[in-house]
Length: 61
Picture 1 (tube, rainbow, N blue to C red):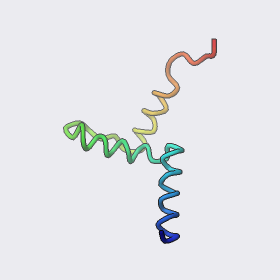
Picture 2: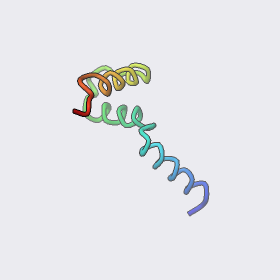
Picture 3: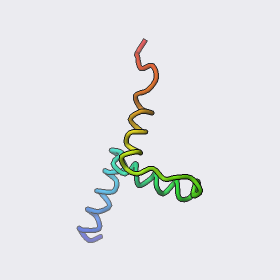
Picture 4: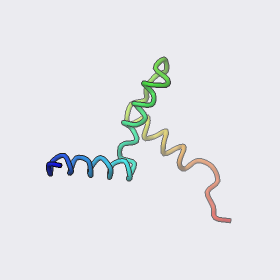
């Protein structure tokens, strides 16, 4: 495997692992399963994810 292809594969894996590709995965899922609904832009998606992640009770006990 050429070094460039290997590096791109590693970079893709790291983006998936860290969640950096979340918007791209959202767009792909949206196009396949909800083509009739409005697609969020990156900023709207980010804000919606932050709201989802941090809303509700968060405590250990």
